[in-house]
Image (cartoon, rainbow, N blue to C red; front, top):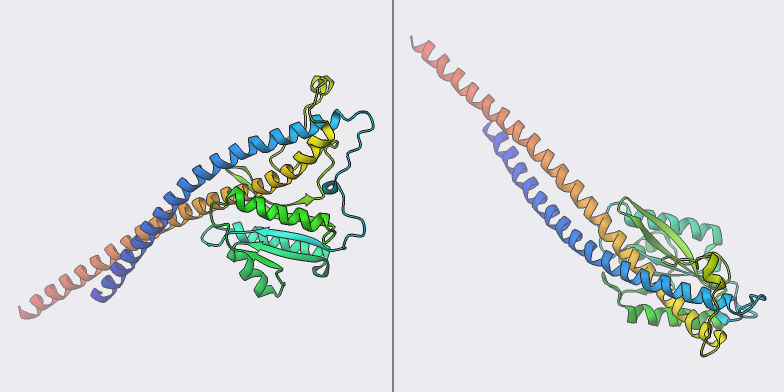
Length: 302
């Protein structure tokens, strides 16, 4: 019984250590989540305003509603290949965050055909998964880290726009986990290029369509002309959309890790209580056995 008690006591100590670690990770993830959520919310406001301005400019071009720009349609004679950027985390312990994203990406790859796709990855989890499944990666972006910088995203977007306008790809897609609410994060794949026509109703993640009604009846004087402004704003739209994808992916990752570590901490607490009860029973059994032996020995001497 003494040996069993020592074993249970050792397990209680080990579970307590794990509980302290998961509690610490939960607190760190909570702090990072709050910081990244604030950052993503600020960037989202900028992205929406850019979309609103683009909508106003496109509506001011007249009844023809035609907007010509290299980013709105594939280049003539463009390759049939598309590019897919998959955004995952580099660290685990975040529940089903990576599994859901990789499952959605795999479905997209099967639908399009691996021979028609160049796949790029952000996060070591994506690299490990595609290596295990035998899917070749065109490029791995290891420099973004847990807090993507706009300068890095800007350079990546510039490369994508150059490749698209040069006809290397007919489309560019981004797979990321969209942050919708505290209780809902959805794996999503959006088309980054070609952009949706600014005269349409569909918007990119983090953007909002221009409100109808009186706002479309307002007449503006533009300087320079709307065509020139659109030519300057459409590349910015691509960059801000891609940056918003990175921000939402990081927010979703930290939230998933926070929830996973809270669940692990609660489970460790329950296990600790269960082991404590087992230890108490083992100790009580040992005491009862010793008392029985003492009583039995005393009775034998009488």
